[in-house]
Image 1 (cartoon, helix red, strand yellow):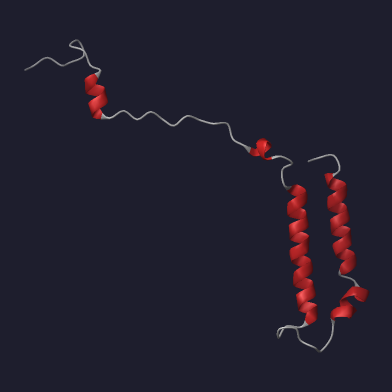
Image 2 (cartoon, rainbow, N blue to C red):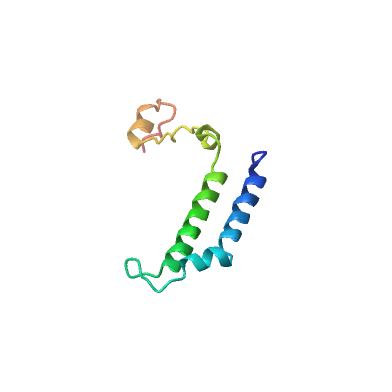
Amino acid sequence: MRSGQPRMLFFAAATVLLLLNYPWLSLFSSAHLLFGIPPLLLYLFGLWLGFILIIRALLAPSSPASTSKPSIPPPIIKTPKDITANRTSQDMPPDV
């Protein structure tokens, strides 16, 4: 974790908990519907999505180079033609 990351995670969680308390929830509890959905439900799901995106941004690696894997060369696959082409007379089995 980066140096200030735990503090930012705590701040994000505390902010979400404050936004889930009575004064904020009462602002969105109404009988009106937005697109057929109660505003309280839209608020809760929006808050949930926002919290997930904030946590994802905080926990993302700082640079793309830190997550790169070391390059591994592809395996060398020899075909039967390659194997027989490199044989010498010593490697060949005797004719029966």
